[in-house]
Image 1 (tube, rainbow, N blue to C red):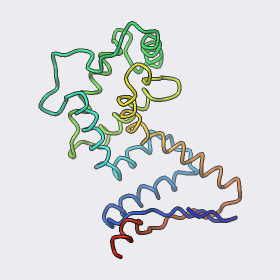
Image 2 (image 1 turned 60 degrees about the horizontal axis):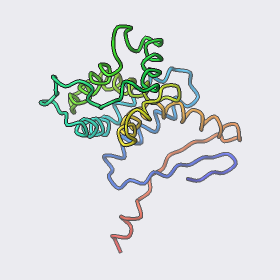
Image 3 (image 1 turned 45 degrees about the vertical axis):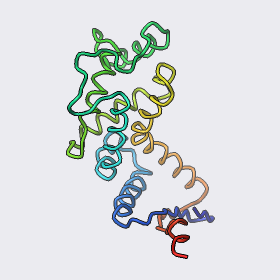
Image 4 (image 1 turned 90 degrees about the vertical axis):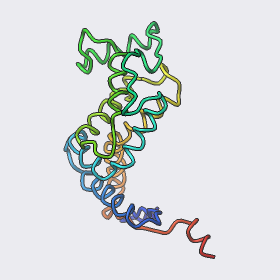
Length: 204
């Protein structure tokens, strides 16, 4: 990264040119919307298109953690995440999500979590963009400051959901950072590729 009085350059280390192309498109999309007012959820499908392979990989890792995959959905099992429904934190989260109409009044939070996990387990490289965007939106709802999945499950589990939520959260954080830079007089924002140190060392 290089920061001058009028220019911000982010150096992106990647030796795989094919992967770099998708990542540059992703970063340029974030830059395009850095000063916009388009809702983050409306931008998310474009984000998914550029990062789909990584999102699918993270979905599959999360599903495997619970022993789920496309063939094994554990349809006869309830409360796949083994959440303690008697805790105050569980009751609070369930109530908050119902007030936001994320969960229907007659539905339990554990049912919602089970359906979400099974949906994640069905994800593959052929998944539709809007389906992936929906999963990310649901993960984000569970990981915002107001609604804490963390504390109801072990840290490793909540971290896996957070990694999915980050694809939506990054839009707002990127906007905030770009606004901060522009407030300091930065007028040019640019991304440039560099070779990673590992590649350079291997050449010697």
